[in-house]
Image 1 (cartoon, rainbow, N blue to C red):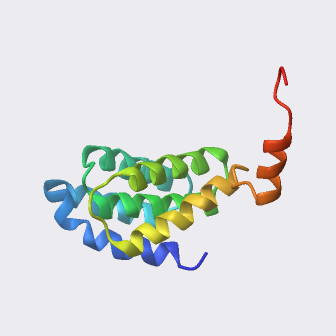
Image 2: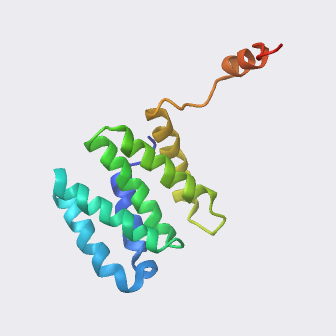
Length: 140
């Protein structure tokens, strides 16, 4: 990766304060628990942060933050569920037409590719594309 997801998470979290309004204190408490613990306690705080993000679909900085901490979850606990969550969050973030920070778009795009690669969903290279085109389909 060309950036540090933990640093990006810190930056976007600070920017999310205005997006979360009355729930900012809850986000701070959950983030503090997430960043200062491990195991089940950190996982519960992580899930709480994701649940909070669902309540604020226009909170782009907070959504980017959730994507970055999902990468942290992947590095802490390398399971398919975290990769799948990352793909889902990235797709929702990237498909939205709302204005976002270009740096976050670039970082999320890079993480999206990493989440997909972790699930074995890398893009096909030119040879694979040509092979697929030349392979007879059923009934050919």
